[in-house]
Image (cartoon, rainbow, N blue to C red; front, side, top):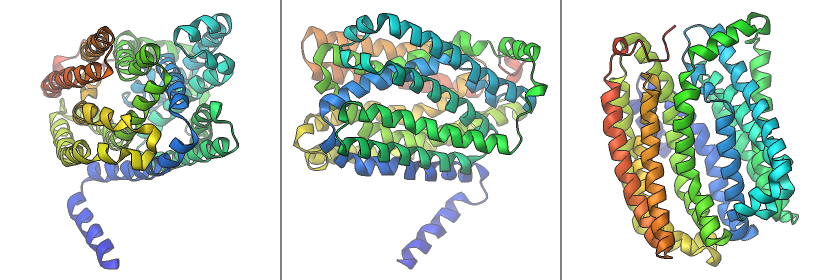
Length: 442
């Protein structure tokens, strides 16, 4: 056993060398492997506690809160990475925390007045009982995101890795506790809510204990200046990210409305099985890419070197696992999840090509924000959203879910090819060609 560990350690050291970039990636990946590994390993238990229908309702719930939480900060949280001055970065954190409070209050009012109509339209009337949970979840996701990007700017990768593990532990422990005690109707939602509350509190304590924030240096005029300086984010990035989020999560809404909660539960589980491993790798690589590419762009005037290094690594990391997933995973799904989940295997096989394309292209497509071409990101996300609309309209027309899923996988893969080609060209763009549009201009 010791020889095996020494072999792994030796090869990792050889691969990493003195590369700070690779070390940062592995720190985040290591934490997220543990964080995602725990829920993945416990999935066979969860699928025997919670039904496909309950997973379907939760898929709609998480879609609602994820979209609104993302919109709530105007995407100013992404601008936390960009200012040269730390004072300005802290101002962006404050902006990214104030706006979600306003949006959460507005959302609460809307849901209290129109809850029956909204949830009936979405075919999830049961959620009308949990308005406060929905609004609370929206708020804490947005608040956590602001602090996450601040710590990412500070390169506190170990702290973020630790927080990811804590987040996973809170999620699975509360999910198991509520499931075993019979609260399966709301167990998935409450566990998701708490998995953001506790990490946010811990991250807040870490930041304020360091004395990073001095609110006296931030005034109304400085915040107003920052709002204008980084106005491209709500103007363009917000719309692009909204389209991206809708493109990623709207299948939950469409499936639930057209085919019901059970079918949505099957799709949600296939998305979890494919999406979780993808997320833990691409989120970590993507976060480091954002920091390193932004830094290289500031120093060298372009970020093509980091772009190519990252995209090549993603391709070679993903190609063999995705081939194995396509061939073998569908045949063992019922053994892993239970007999109630057999259709998940078919969904995984159909969608695997699309997920591989997302795996390779997703993280590096952030380059549009780095070079100040936020408008182009709207076109990127529009391509993916159009693919969804066409696919599910055809699936609904033929009353055949398989047709819809196959079309979605093929059309979205084609969209990612286009996105990659354009992003590669943008990564070569000089900072001096973007003085009037980029996000670094004063």
